Image (cartoon, rainbow, N blue to C red; front, side, top):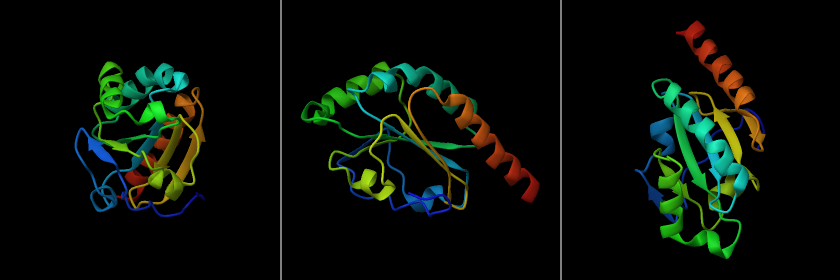
Length: 151
């Protein structure tokens, strides 16, 4: 997915956990971060406490949506997804992408991966890997600063 592209429709979920959201609910309000993860991804689990702290710090200024992207047959077990999400404090909406439909829309094959959209729904930042919370926070703050200067 290229920078400045519009956020795709959130269709094709096998299931939603912790509530369902639509693209229409996200665009026009606050910026949104999509976080791709998988139950079999060690780096995802290592990064989760930082992501949860980030989510909680920005809860009034930012939408955070988790996308579970399976990497193997074992990752398709919905009970395991629920269990791991609970163990790691993932309480934001989770789009379960068992058929890789949203991953294809995002052109994403990585976990963990982060996509930041501004409030107009345009992609402003992408990163993959487990060690990028400082950069993610910097990019989100830049978008939030831009919003304050235009309001």
